[in-house]
Length: 340
Image 1 (cartoon, one colour):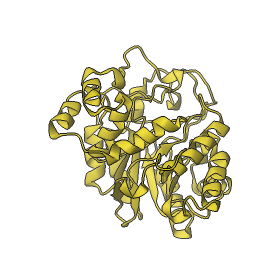
Image 2 (cartoon, rainbow, N blue to C red):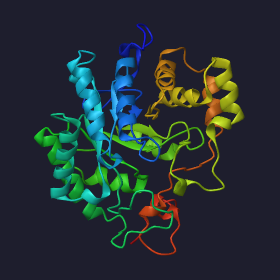
Image 3 (cartoon, rainbow, N blue to C red):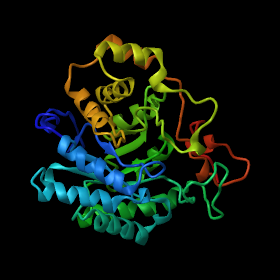
């Protein structure tokens, strides 16, 4: 990368958490395990930090935290960035719920990443259900269970201990719903600092988004460009494609950017933190640079608000716990937590 090709991190907007900490307003996702090798993800992180990224979203289940950690350590060693200027998130996978396992999961992520602390640790999914890599859409764990609030709060209590021990500075949730979050916020000693959720123009989750922000949490949006490389099991014939939407394409053309970049720009301006994944330095720079350029107009933001199709792409079939269920059972679509 030539001098001047990067983005000044100081020009990237940020979100302030209830603790006063500032989370960079665009991050680099690292879920590429279905199509990118750990080495390729590590290289992407290395280039992204040099390009100006200061927010890296990781997870133990992605199987690449060692490579991501090597890239982070190299950047710090070479004086590209200080550790305190980075925002590093990791997540506790489903098979590590519970008091002891949460501690082990976080310790393993810290070891693999080569860090003394995380800035954010999330409970990856609210269900203690696992699946094998590359499994089919109808795969089910024989030990799969529904969301049980008492069990989740045991896991959340362990997350609170991580904060108390300094292993992570914040704890958050992911893939939750309004009914589940109401209970967690009611019972938590340390309330969640963020909720990571699927967010893109065709799936805006306005009710959840509004609840999260009203509760003092920061929404973090995964699949911000419509997850074109998502696993085959999450694809259905009714899925729509954000970057092919005529409104997205028209507004992107007006700003001289790619439709995918427009999706990132919209998300950051809307108020959530998009975390697109790419191994392309050029695309990564576009995603970061777009939030430093003049904003979308109120009319453009309104036009994008009008194309929400309620099209969830990451449906989560493999986390279902009973025969005959459809993926909607995971998401409490009738406003109530789906019973066991």
